[in-house]
Amino acid sequence: MNRRLDETELRELRGLVDEDHICLDEPMSRHTTFRIGGPAEVFLTPDLQELESVLSFCKAHDIPVTIVGNGSNLLVSDAGISGVVIKIGKHMAQIEVSGHEITAGAGAMLSAVAKTAERNSLAGMEFASGIPGSLGGGCIMNAGAYGGELKDILTEITVISKDGTLETVDAKDADLSYRHSRFMESGEIVVSAKMVLEDGVEEEIKAKSADFNQRRRDKQPLNFPSAGSTFKRPEGYFAGKLIQDSGLRGYRVGGAQVSEKHCGFVVNVDNATAADVRQLISDVQEKVKSETGVEIHPEVRFLGDF
Ligand SMILES: Cc1cc2nc3c(=O)[nH]c(=O)nc-3n(C[C@H](O)[C@H](O)[C@H](O)COP(=O)(O)OP(=O)(O)OC[C@H]3O[C@@H](n4cnc5c(N)ncnc54)[C@H](O)[C@@H]3O)c2cc1C
Image 1 (cartoon, rainbow, N blue to C red):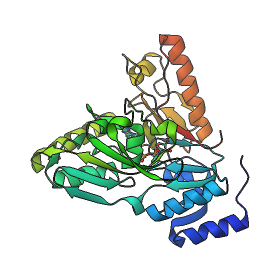
Image 2 (image 1 turned 90 degrees about the vertical axis):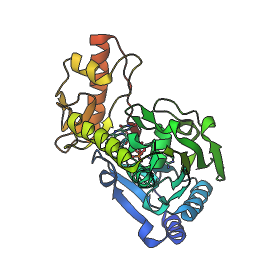
Image 3 (image 1 turned 60 degrees about the vertical axis):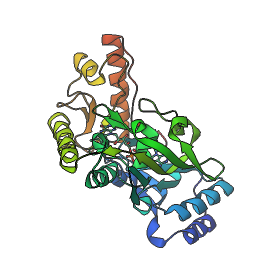
Image 4 (image 1 turned 90 degrees about the horizontal axis):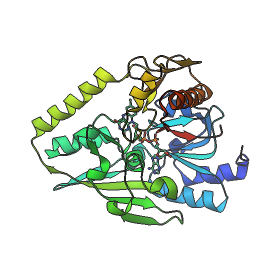
């Protein structure tokens, strides 16, 4: 555990942001789709200007900073997260359309950006309409589904670099690949992104998104909290199939379970703790390896002290 912020630091931090944009000891279970996670020591939902000042303050005071988006790919520890947790969300969620280009704040939900594309008869983002993440989280993860991924449509990503400066990165230089971007290693913070789409017909775009979303409802256990596919797809296999073939359908640790409906999802069926999920993930990895010889790795990102 890191040291806690002292009174002076807290007072100074409060002075940097609107009072509605900061709270203390905020349960992260309120900000993750798993509905799991202990308290964030300081929890902020800044606008861009506040974000810049908070980052330079934290840097100067050596306060650890953790960035989250919509929390749809996160397992936050039961002990929570010390230091400052910054949610890039509704105060950085502007969406603008110009011709074939959409520029949006990292806090905009992928579903909202996809809806904007649809209303403007712009095709190519239907795949993302049902991914429950923010644009920023989507850029970090290179989110994708049904044969599409953000890499296909992103042209520019604006980030705050480690030294605190705003920088616009050509998407080709972002090392976007299957559930990976360079930002995972660099720690750069995504503040906005530009996408280029194609001319389409609103009704057709709408029908395509509806079809993808129906397929999600049919196949995925959306009635339980989860973080989506828990494991990455190993080359040449499907994680869910490997887990199923290893006899783990319905396998349970505490309140966490391998979904009965889709073995690729770990679901929170009964007040699971992060420790339950963590243990279950490691049991599944071990059993799949011993039964099938294939190593599977989590897609879900672990945050906080485990
Ligand atoms: C029911 C369900 C279905 C899903 N289906 C899909 C799917 O089809 N395809 C898919 O790819 N994913 C899917 N996911 C997973 C998830 O929605 C995506 O990974 C999404 O892109 C995560 O975005 P987020 O805003 O929730 O990010 P978070 O989960 O909050 O964060 C993910 C990572 O990005 C970092 N991060 C977030 N925002 C920023 C930022 N602005 N700058 C820097 N770092 C940041 C965090 O630190 C963390 O490491 C699904 C999840 C659920 C619950």
